[in-house]
Every structure is written in C-alpha cells, then in structure tokens.
Length: 283
Ligand code: PRT
Ligand code: ZN
Image (tube, rainbow, N blue to C red; front, side, top):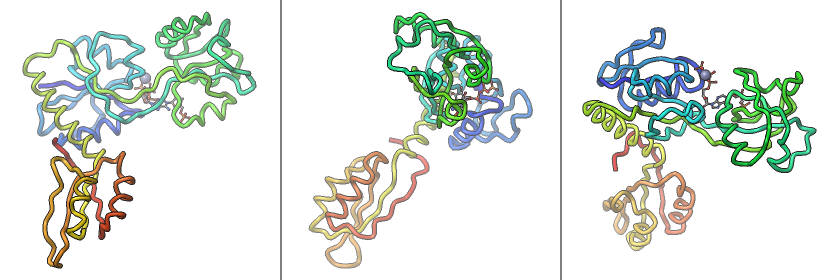
C-alpha cells in the first residue's frame, strides 16, 4: 500500500484530489478524517498541513506527498522531487514599499525583511552577498512594513493584488514555484512499483492536457503538405471521404504550437477543422 500525504485544506487541496480522480483513483471519504483509503488503487491518503508534509515523507510516515516547491525547499529535507504537477503556481518574491526607489538587490542591505521563508531567503541573500536582517513571522507577512515591523517582505505572490493593496511592489522574484510530487528516498520495492504506476497515470493526464485531437477535411493534393504540418504521434490518420478527391485527416497537436498549426492548415485548404480535448494520452 502506497501512502500519499496531501494538504488537508487550502490552495492545493482541490487540485490534489482532482489529479487523483483524473488518474482514476476514487476516494469516497472526504478530508474530514486524518486518512482514508482509495477504493480502487492501493493508496492510503493522509490529509495534513502542507508545512508538515516534507517531514512526514522524510520519516516514511507517508511514502509520497503533494506540496508546493516553496515548502519543499524551505524545509530542505532529503527527499526526492519526482514530478512537477503544474498547479498551485506562484512565485516567492521580495517586495518593498511602493515609495522605495529600488534598483538592485544591494539596495536591500541593512534592511529588515519579514518572511515565512527564512531558509530560502537566507540562501538568496548570501548568494547576492547582501547583508540584511531576516525577521521570521508565520502569517500576514504583507502587513509587516505598514505596521513598522519590517522594511520589506519576502512572500508568495500570484496575482500581485495582495502586494498592491498593501502599498508594496515586487522587487525581486527569488523562486518560481508550483505543486510537486515528492517521495521518500527509501521506498520498498512494492511501493516503487506502485509509484511508477501512479506516475504513468499522472503523465497520461498531464500529456493529454497539453495536447488536442484534431480532425479535418482536405483535398488529396494537399495531403503531403498537411502530413508535414501535422506529424501526430507517429503520422496522421488519413481516410478517404465519400466526396471524390478529399480525405479526412486526424492527428494530435501540442497546445504550444496550436494556433501556428491552425494557420498553416488553413493555408493548405483544410476545411471543417474540429478540435477535441484528449482525456488520457499514453505515448
Ligand atoms: O493550512 P496549511 O498550512 O496547510 O496551508 P497554508 O495556509 O500554509 O497554505 P496555502 O493553502 O495558503 O498555500 C498552499 C500552497 O499554495 C503554497 O505553499 C504555495 O505553494 C501555493 N500557492 C499558490 C500560494 C499562492 N499561490 C498564494 N497566492 N500560497 C499562498 N498564496 C498567498 C500569499 O502568501 C499571499 O498572502 O496569497 C497571497 C498573495 O496572492 P495574490 O494573488 O494576491 O498575489
Ligand atoms: Zn502551511
């Protein structure tokens, strides 16, 4: 049985549950209890505070865990980062009052910086050779400069509106973060196999999200052209239409290339282009 730790409530909870569901793992009991067992996969789910997850994974109480990379780096436990999950994206930034004429990290010298991420901040300041005072606080970091507790802050930012409403501006981004899957380094052979199975599913879900299925009609004289625009997983599927001289083409397009591909297809006389989401993709 593989044991996974996920956040009990908060910003990563829903996406963590959603990911497990998309991997076909059903969890009938909610997060009211400390732990529950999946109905159709040998997985036990622990609901914990995100700050505790690296320690639990390190101790082997949980085998794997979903946590923000920011927490993983701050706790600095000897555990593996196995997969970047693409949700919970944010950045850890140093912010200063709007009126502060900030030019470079050396401007932070001698300042008092409030943060819940003292370890990451300390490392950053050392690397920049900046001598500043770190003041550790556990919450509401953004109000520290306003109440005279600190000159600057180092906190997580996503939209930037918290900084804005507290009269602060972003000075330096010191870390770009997202939710990651982390694992204990000494998994049993059985759990290694289960983790591989889970990773295959996660990969299928994530790859599918980055790709679209595309179906179109094209005149046969353009097929060579279209095959070069739409490489597909091996090559596109081409089937003749009832209308003489025309074919239906099916393929997979990466999200990043999507609009560029569509423009080229239009230039190659493609018609009736349908684009469909893919649920799972195993390459
Ligand atoms: O109870 P528990 O300890 O488990 O939860 P928590 O309150 O410590 O964490 P939680 O749920 O707030 O965040 C969990 C994880 O979500 C973080 O560790 C990050 O990896 C990720 N994440 C993504 C964020 C944000 N975006 C985010 N915007 N975590 C916090 N924030 C906060 C930030 O601290 C600031 O107060 O949101 C505010 C800024 O947001 P904007 O949009 O105004 O810029
Ligand atoms: Zn927390």
